[in-house]
Image (cartoon, each protein chain N blue to C red):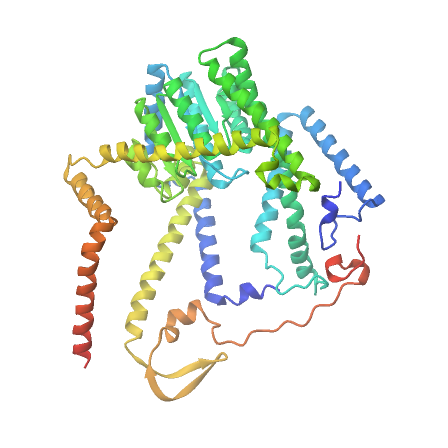
Length: 314
Length: 258
């Protein structure tokens, strides 16, 4: 038990612990009051502008936290967190909002979070429960419903964030047709180009996940974001180092090799292979190691056995 | 009632069918649920948050353990764990199906909440005859019709005697109604919405690919090359040329090697 982890070798364990260390260290730096730099994300800077414009025009701000399966997942939660900030700005301006949800679990979570935002701003009585709506959990029925809402309400600003698929362009183009400012972000790589073509501002890749840290400046979020950036730098460094070393090392020859964890001499030198290189030994240390066979497990008593194993049926 | 009891292998989460243990466990769970709901209703908001955070954390922790804790390898149904760590691993793996069932039960309740949201918004609109109330009336009518015909058709097909319904010749009013609403209307409207994407792609591309600057022109030319490369005629013309060049290179390579 636990052999799965030990088999990856000391280097992978060290790498994993180093990455955890990077994140914890940066969280402690952020807690210590250090002002950690996060670069400007134009899409998020445009939130105030978009909501301000909606207020001037007296039209609502429409938010769509994407399509997710039957449950609320991390992407939807991230989108709802961003919408919490948008709703806060809208609440301060006294601007109406509309949050269109694809599934009922997103609807309940979004409603609670946005109600909380209004209460924190001391405007609990201005929160309209119908401003967060369940539309449909069928992809194109949802697209038709949200498009209809955007057209009828003549939204001045739209925020599409989260998981989007083929309906992304339908929503973005409909919002464009009513002249709405659009800020979008899709976690689906294939939909990002559509949003770039149709929207005013697009959060690309990690910017979507960095948004909460950027908007709230909470030490845990900012610290983990910077820590993850350090992890990415470490991985990029390893990839570059590995490629360079493998290229250089494979030009040479070897006269010994590792077998069952022991170094044995070869009868005659041979060209170095990818498996002989330093990085191969670091990242795949147990390629030629004999597997450890665990002792057989004890058997359950007849009455505790499931019926599929011939136990007493329940 | 037997839903949880069907879990196999036997764990803490299940009990023999129709046994006293099963009913005791179900009653305790029901009492706990009702107590928790009433308690949450009267609890101060700060404490309510604490309970919700704890439940969320424990639920999340279960799946973190499920994905990250070493899973039992080559486990047979009659195997007992070798030690407490493997015991935990067995417990996590056995409990997963029960937790997944709980998630499904919660999702079922949430569908009800979603329908409640829809009806509250749209019935309110119809009652007050607000702007565009007619669309709300269409929505509520369609919802009711779909629920009625869908449920009635499903109920009929559940009966093993009704296997003859597999053949449309034996269909009645209910079956034709469901077919018209689901396959005849909903599926086709879905397909219609999907087809509209083609027009939206055109209008978005028209705005994005206008050669107004150097960058936009590079984008336009790149897009043109990609689009042309996907056209059958161009592939037919240039595919041969590219193959020819590639084969020519192979020949040169072979010559150099010899």
